[in-house]
Image 1 (spheres, rainbow over the protein chains, first blue to last red):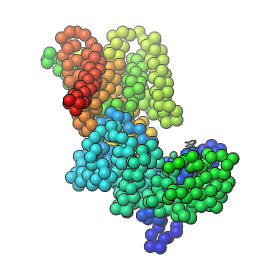
Image 2 (image 1 turned 90 degrees about the vertical axis):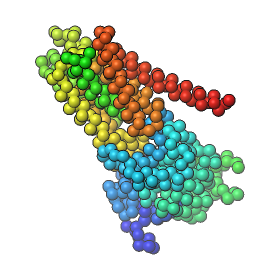
Image 3 (image 1 turned 60 degrees about the vertical axis):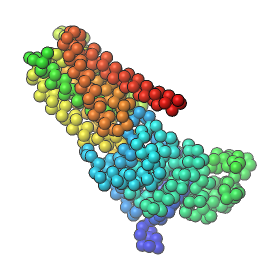
Image 4 (image 1 turned 45 degrees about the vertical axis):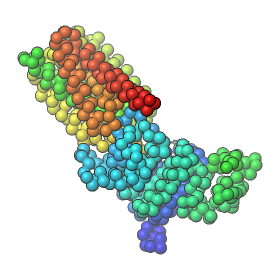
Length: 276
Length: 270
Ligand SMILES: Nc1ncnc2c1ncn2[C@@H]1O[C@H](COP(=O)(O)OP(=O)(O)O)[C@@H](O)[C@H]1O
Ligand SMILES: [Mg+2]
């Protein structure tokens, strides 16, 4: 286990992880670390294995080689330290639950039995709802909320058990641009206020540039990790993609552009068509 | 109406209604209406089989309910749950048909297993019904939060060490348990309607889980009570009334919610 400057183990150590589905190798020998309090973007185009990697960290996906440690601890002991907001959540519109009920369920859903919420628990739910700006729809039926509102409720649900690391799978997909900015700002604030490290997957990195401390860039089953400046460079990404790509900065936005003639499939979000 | 054999009917009916209201709440929440239909029908085959070889039908009901629950849960893990349920249902019905064809004393017993014979409940049935009912409700209380979380966010549950498949199989076993106790009373076909109509109506009326659960039990109780009284007066089968009243709750609740939102809209427009 490696130790950072303050003598505490990294929040997350992914070491030599490989995953295959049948004969398809989705991830080979992936290694990276996350340090406490950092906001990390897990960036890669659709189908590169971001969800798979997050599921590996959560212990939901078996791996063929390697190891994952959270706060220095192996799988069985890390579940309480992790919060998770999955990629696609389909909530039945008729589910008899308010936003606050779903958040409260994050407190103790692993426990057996049935009890009334104590006053302290209700206060905690209220605090978290305020922290994610969800108090105005706290009593609404969860199925009736918009995508952005549901996203905030799910974030609150994940945060209420005081995780050290919050994993979010494409929380920005399917949000309108205004909500994307709101959710990013909210996550940034919450991470600082609650001392939570964040690992957030996205197929488009530009919305995250202002808040991202580090980036884990996935392509071809491998990753490159470091600060944005270290990773999002033509030489590093060309090596990762296995063919030449240019990194173009324009008005504070970054575009990864494949050479003409190369398949654009493995370049995130076809950025060469992107015009702002 | 409140004396003699009718006392048994009221008591057993009340127990059945509470169990159906509680278990049915999660049947609807988990989208498990199809398994909740398949398990009682499978159980019916079990009762027919037990009859054939001279065993207590309750034993056949229990064994076949459990087999159906395990089969649906186990097969559903690998493939599509609806296909698994359908296959379990078809297999059970085929067995039921085979058992019936061999049976000599056919009609009244079979009829009552399908449609219930609540007015003919004997006092010896009360204690077993009460015990099985308590076990079902207790199991639901113990699993309460897990049932909620795995229905809404299965991956999140799994990441906290709550295996959604295991919870699903346990829940189906509870449905099987509830079925075992209720089939002799309201029949295989109608326990299903009692498990769906009242909870479905309840959840459209409130967005609070606890309140929806209580409403579900209340509607279920009213359904059974009205059905028993009406059946006593008219001599029509209890099952008929249970089915009709259960569906009526749902339609009434939907209509109520529709009208409410229509009135709100109109008030805003004016
Ligand atoms: N359970 C599975 N069985 C087989 N293939 C899978 C499974 N889960 C994911 N895959 C494949 O693995 C690849 C990576 O998937 P995923 O991790 O979901 O990518 P991303 O989240 O980056 O879009 C995809 O090609 C997908 O089809
Ligand atoms: Mg994904």
